[in-house]
Length: 296
Image 1 (cartoon, rainbow, N blue to C red):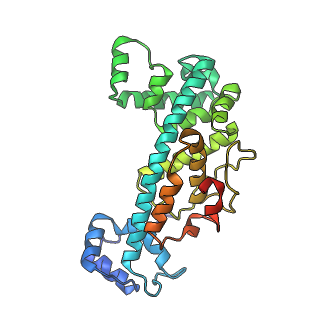
Image 2 (cartoon, rainbow, N blue to C red):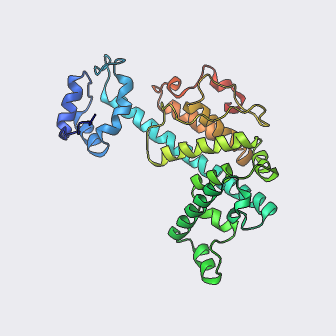
Image 3 (cartoon, one colour):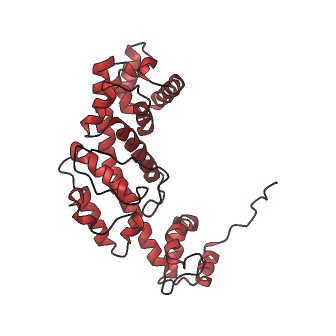
């Protein structure tokens, strides 16, 4: 069966506001709302308006106002910034450990050797990704290396500085099982299978943040593994591990090794204080989450 084409016309900002009002949404300041919708599309705002609607209906709840949705939008934006600042530390640390440990085991060009990987076709694809990232780089160290040497790639500690977090994650994922793979994971107090899963999950969350997509009440499509015997402090496992709470706890777990004096939990609590109407249950936070040692 042929699907119909979408051909509804675009509607103006005043028309958007009128439609929202017809659905029962109130506005404290329509001129400010107009300015917001001129700079943040209604399509993007719809995710933050959804909790204000009656369940399963277009109609908004009593006393729902546009400014409430905008507060959620601002909370989500600030949350993503806090997360990105910590993911940067994790990413840099993993680049370093993977380069050091694999370099010790298999030499400074270990990532070029297909024997270090369990899937030759995947390895070939990873090298293609690295080559593309290398070609796009204007890093002075890369340019200087290419002027002096004929190697396709610089050594691991240079090449991995310009690789994407996604490529880095896939490099670890497809490493051949063995002591080196386990040693990287043990540095962070994890098994290699959990390390692989957690890397995949935080790269996914990083991509959400990098594209400024909604995170706060999102049900994640990637379910990070539950560690059986984590070597460091972790949380009581929640019922739903596809929510933001579980991924934020994973970030905190990594930070115990990478930045033990981090203020991530404190800054998150300060953010909640700034936006007291945010429902932490929508992010998968259980009751008494603040009593968890990891978050305390």
